[in-house]
Image 1 (cartoon, one colour):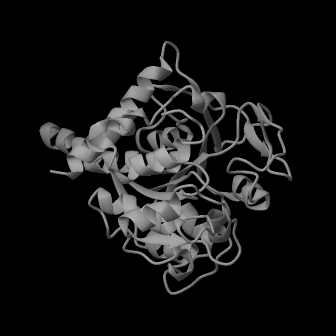
Image 2 (tube, helix red, strand yellow):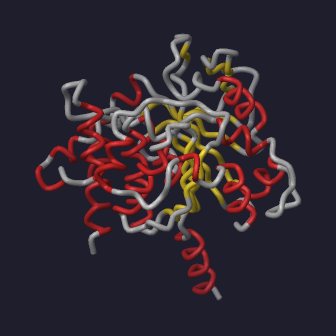
Length: 327
């Protein structure tokens, strides 16, 4: 009985994390790296990618996501896209990836509506089993919370999320504060959606930060090596970084994916006090009081951790993804 119990515990512990990846896949290239890294976790058996949701109205963004999914041997991952009311961002790489690698999916306006796909997938999953990681605008998540009962579930959106989602990992903002009103980052492009999700989302939310924190983990250099330069990821990084005149980029979205699959340890420190205050323009401030038991923050490194070591691990994961997918 003891051996059986230990075996069952091991099997339960080894279950892959069920992930829905919500991305804008347009104005920044770390979305590419984050999706590539997520495929690496899937290759290792640590994650199961249930769907990719696109929060941008850029018509080429879903195709760019499909190109990456296809490269890693998962062309059948469902992709949903925001429709009509959303944010449009220009992209240095989305259309070019579609032209170069011929995705299987159509333009964004011809894709399944993201909130309907959310409801379809969530309703089919075990209770409290899904981790949603958002590295783009919060438009899709806000719309999901406001949905009504439909053919997939008799529950309203907020109740469906409460029943099926284990936690939300949300990359956005800079900490402890971002008071710059300029419209960069994931919170300020659709500030009303950001306020709504942060206030109403019914499960735990783990916020991960950008800025100097993410800049301290420089990733992407691996794709500039000769043996990897013909991959879709290398193509995207090269196109995006040409004007930057460098061969690396920050890891804001990659950090969020890591936290979604593995948690904050051993690399990061978890702040459990306070809450994320979102102002009307989408700027934010982490306040230590009053406490919101749903809100957690990952925006500092654990004691003794060298961020460059994390960068090497993340880059190695992306290389391993390619090698795993090719076998």
